[in-house]
Image 1 (cartoon, rainbow, N blue to C red):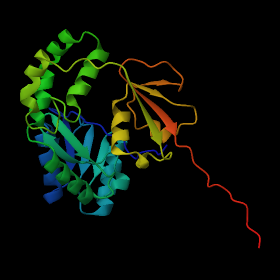
Image 2: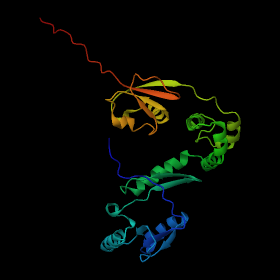
Image 3: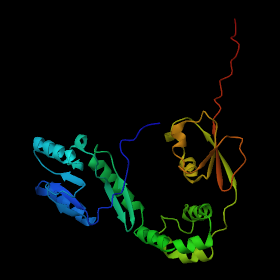
Length: 269
C-alpha cells in the first residue's frame, strides 16, 4: 500500500499565539489566514506559541529562522520551501462548518487552488446549513435510533445520492425535521458482490468505490490487495468470504477469473 506524504489534520488555533516571521505580502497573507481562524499573530520571541510561519524572501535567513523555531519545539511552515516544512497549508473550501482541504504536500499550490475551485462549483452554498442542522439534530437522532449502528445506517441512507438529505441537493438542509419525523425505512441486510478487474484501486468503478465506502461488512480472502481494502471504511467489519451475512450492507470482494485463450492444434499441410 502506498504511503501518503502527510496526515491531514484540522488544528484549532482560536485564541492561540502563532509566530509569523517576516514582512511583506507573503507574511500578510499568513496573518490573514491565522486571524480568520481566530489565532493571534506574534513575533519570534513569543514563548507560548506552538506553530510558526516563516515568510522571508532571503532563502538563507528563512532556513536559519526555521531552524531556530524548530529547536524550540515549534512546528514550522516555510513559505515556498516544502522541504523545510513540518506542515503545509492546503487550499480550503468553506461552507459554514464544512471545511474541505486540498493539499499537494507543497508540490503545487496552483493545482490545489484549481481543484478547490472545481469543487466550489459542485457544492451548494447550503451545505454548511445541512451540517449545522445535523449537529442540532443529534439529540433527536439518539432518541430515535438508540444504537450507534442504527443511527449510522439511517444517516447513510439519508445522505446517499438521491436520498432526502443528499449533500449535493441545496434543499436538503430544510428537510431534516421532516426526515426525522418520517425517515426512510431502516435498511435491512443486503449483500453486494464486487468483481475486481485488478489489484489497482484506480480501476474501481465509481459505483464500486461508493459501495466500499458505505459497506458495514467486507468479505474477502487473504489474498485481497491491501490497496483495495484501504478504500473501505476503517470501521467496517472484515470477514472471510464464507462468513454469514451481517446486518446492514455486506460487500463481497472477488477477483475476476482471467480466461485463457483456447489453444488449437496447429494445422499441417
